[in-house]
Length: 131
Length: 131
DNA sequence: CTCCGTGCAAACGATTTGCACTATG
DNA sequence: CATAGTGCAAATCGTTTGCACGGAG
Image 1 (tube, protein in one colour):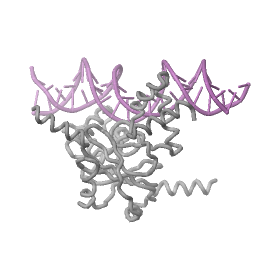
Image 2 (cartoon, helix red, strand yellow):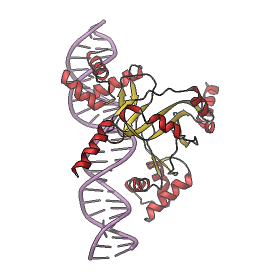
Image 3 (cartoon, rainbow over the protein chains, first blue to last red):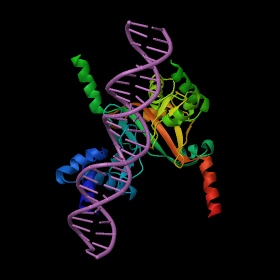
Image 4 (cartoon, rainbow over the protein chains, first blue to last red):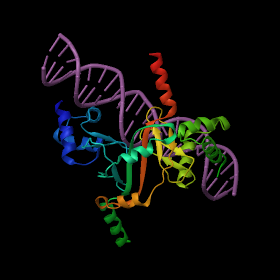
């Protein structure tokens, strides 16, 4: 656990958001100006591999990293691409229902709810006023 | 609807699989050797925009295109990345449950089941035999 | 000393774009 | 003849990697 690894982890946990590698890079640079983006990527990979954080491959281009490594689902905003945690209980029933599909052995699932976040809804209203 | 557009669409529908742009490119090249990958990308974008096909952003690197534009969920194989359609009914209840989340206006959801497909399971067995 | 982790820059894979050209309406 | 669509190559974006160096054990 190097110095840079620790700062990356701390900042991610402190923000309590689902950040991309380069968002986190910008933040960490303030505390450690000579850090490189590659180091951020490498450490995020190591940390998620170790189960300390989660890695999200939500629709869109960039991966995001989750301060909470527990299995859970996400909701994301189609406008600003912000991602939040969902707290929906995953019933065993669901998993059982899936087990029969097309010869697959089911190992898990990912539910991704899509919507427009509070902030973006407000922005929409603003826009309509001005037009 | 140009000639190349038509062939791209036909081949995708004929294959009844969830192909990536470059897989489709390889297929279409046989019928139309001078076509470029950019054209395949452009037309897949246009076709999915028009609702004739679907665009999938499943975990992993490449986008896949779906011959079936209807809303439905998918299962994909973690080993070979093959994607198949799911035929799980989406109840209104589900959507209602989601509506309350964190100030979001929910517009939809995407369920992605993860597993190992039939073919890859068989390959696993083979490997074990040989080792 | 020995290595693992770093910073940098260059490489990479997937996708997109600028441009000149071609077919089609 | 106007213009939407093409092929090609170069550009772009997010991410990964090779390499020489530096610092901790």
